[in-house]
Length: 549
Image 1: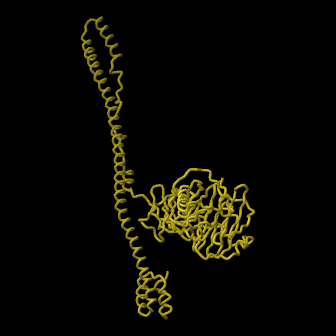
Image 2 (image 1 turned 135 degrees about the horizontal axis):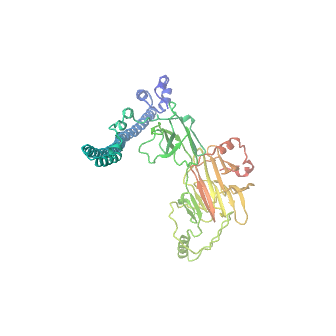
Image 3 (image 1 turned 120 degrees about the vertical axis):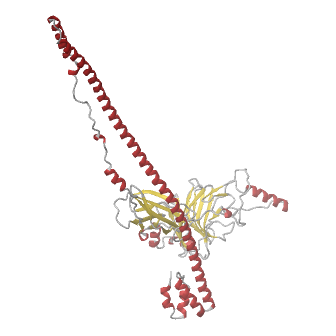
């Protein structure tokens, strides 16, 4: 990226101006200077400089659209989230009010129960004392009357009766102390501390937004390690939440992106690795937030990491009629195309009056024995040059024109014969992989006896290594190198050296079995290391590499 600071040197002469006018400008000062220089440049240079300005303006407009979408989305989020937190606050206060009401009711009931207990005890004492007083007053009156008795015997009898009644009188058996007091202070409350706590209520402490260290993030072997740090130490952080999504847009994440954020929760460290990813997008967005026991903080500023990889599927429009093709799988189908063959033979018989004598082309791939009599309509094909005869081939749907790429292929266990390699798109409909100077492949034949060979230009080199369950293919288009690996152990199987003069496509042949294609893979680190140290390990196959292409 170039900007205004570089234009001071650009104004020295016209050549420098032309050079810098070809760079992408990014600020208004640069654009103004570039407009000024348009008057002293040639017409072609003026057009080129103007195109740069148009590109800059278009990029800025797109950036502004994305920013406006972000602002609108954020504004709506503020409104929605504000309503939500107000509702949550009301709910919390309602809960608090409910707790206080419950406590008030419970404590009020306690006071009433204490009041009832004391009242009952005092009322009982009052009743007993009143009865005792009535009995005592009656006895006192009887005693006073006894003093007036003149007869000695009657007096003695009355005195004895009074004595007995006094002994049993309730007044002398009562406790002259109230069983309850009128004091209720033991049921008083002091909410001063609780009042201070309530008055001290605050919003939850929220952790600050983490900062993602893009320099420390690593993208390798279809794994991504994201590293972040807190702007300041926070001992109350409990865990982190990482969110990511795939995108094909470079730069800041777009609100209206077609994919949703995926979430990884309960991360205890300040880094996390996503493994086993399929890189079927150019970039991935990442953001992270910190959480304490109470709340989650703001997201970090999002970052975008590049995740380019080779993505390819089987091109069903190019496949042989005897191949059943899906996006990532191809299988041998002996019944495929029989209906079409019958129609072709019928037309030939009707037009010529005789059946032509067809000869088999010599081939290293055994001809299948077609035992099924079932017919079906052929699949719709978009290319007239689809493969036919014994060229049981299907091409990939993505061309390779530059760079380094890697993909893997796995064969079914009972697959009788298959080839994996690359080819130019102009491969003839009868051509077989490895039999022309425009195809390079590894061929596996499990028919009768197992053979494993590298093939190119109708020449083969036997490979004295076990056939891997999964095969990795590495293509360095610019370096003119095609290498095959054991995908599990990364053992090098064979390397072709070639100068590719046209775009190439992955190419596959399968007979009596099936293949599964895995793409969206980065070039593995182990393969990169082997490529650096490998020096002609495939050179023993020089007879396969020395032919002109």
